[in-house]
Image (tube, rainbow, N blue to C red; front, top):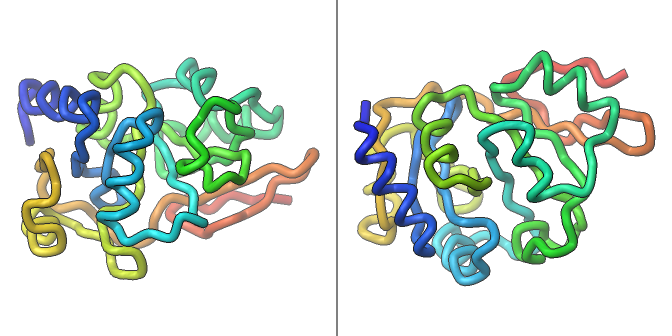
Length: 195
């Protein structure tokens, strides 16, 4: 497991506009500052990701939601209480000042609190939300360890926060809310009844 110094170094790189790979409870993710348009452009280019696809984020705690969303749907409160920290991403209305790149101009933003200790330490050290898109070339399997990260990206990453092998399997479950109705947008690790 990486040291706290490594976490601080990774956080500084993110705040300077860099791209950091880090472990989560599913796969490795790629972190940039979601408020930095140049960093987002680099991230999309690195992943060869369509600009029509938004990028998910992780937050340190529920208080950080106020930096990215205009409000919390009441139906989300019991889900956050039960499944956060954990691999459940919820889709919120985005604050208008967020870069259109991260929301794919959808007006919404996905966020979760990670239960992986390194992911949590990283977002805490950054002091604001970070992106948590899977560490892969779009359409390819995500990386499960540092060796695979290097094989995929070579020297294009600014830092790898090495947490060893991640579990893989399914990604985070993604839930949205339309009116008072929950919507399953992507099946994942957590099985959430949306009725």
